[in-house]
Image (cartoon, rainbow, N blue to C red; front, side):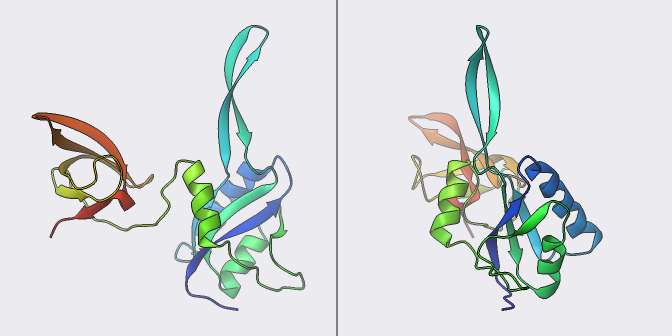
Length: 181
């Protein structure tokens, strides 16, 4: 089942080794020249506040202990690199004996990524500071604004829009905007 479409897959790992597995996959993808097949590796985490001994502190908990999400194009080579990464016990949705796993459904991964505050659609844009864009989603939908900051890693940008005669800054995901020609 070779697919040349990138999809999200779930890996089962030893509990407590999720971040180490993420680092290992990213390192192996780079060293084995698989960057065109293995794209993003995510360990879903959430931050909660706990009060212990009268002091409040932030605690980071794994949303799915023992699991890591990987966005990849499923080929024999990419499957082999990920499957044989130290700490990975297998793909979820694989029936063993070397069979390829089933990817997550778009609505499943969209829900997970949105809950983590990550960009859902992988929109590729080439933006420049000062460029005027149109906002197509969210509270400022329909307005145009100027790009003031770009964070390609998180697929987010800051845009100044004019409201009530004043400039207002807003942070948007790439999939909430449209480039003007």
